[in-house]
Image (cartoon, rainbow, N blue to C red):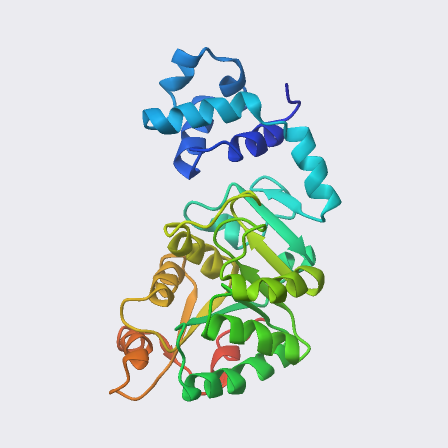
Length: 293
């Protein structure tokens, strides 16, 4: 049916229920990924850790998806697929725990090969001081050649993207769900701009609607692409601190902008600083950590 393991991976990646662990299990059983397309249903069922409902959807998609038609549609729309085995897969991302099997990308793919990638994350409800911190940090980082990585969410994320664009820099947005369902809807127009001049990527096929669990999962990609992560305003229990935790797990730098002790949005960065994150007051505090660049 397919000539290469890459083609088989892409098909499997479009099957409902075929999450990261399912594909890992199939690769462990057969490194060529030929088995799913040739085994009997009962034999294949024993290989995949899925519920009955998930199995039914997976098996249907395995034999019903017209992959060639889908790939042609992607090409016509400028959507590129990059698998873990491709030469243009982001080098730092390849070394994280559970790297995405496939990335779906639209825009300037060369940005994925940049060394100077730095992620900036934070609250969806920044104060004027949080915005002022971004305005102080992003322009000099851009001038120093850093590409800004973030998640296109309300607040700090989208402001970081916008400042990078406004100051002539480059930026990568990592979204939950697929490229056809950018969330939040309010940022779809801006996302289309990024798809033309910068880059938007997702680890799910374009038609995938975002689910709550996908947001914390995509945070590992934001940190995994980057040399380090800067947290600008975040509550103690927030997605931004999940991103910082991933960065630590991945052996990347963690930076935090301090704030007033009475402000809830300061609690996250201040806690990170207590635990060893580098306190950031200006862009040079970040740049100094990468003297080899």
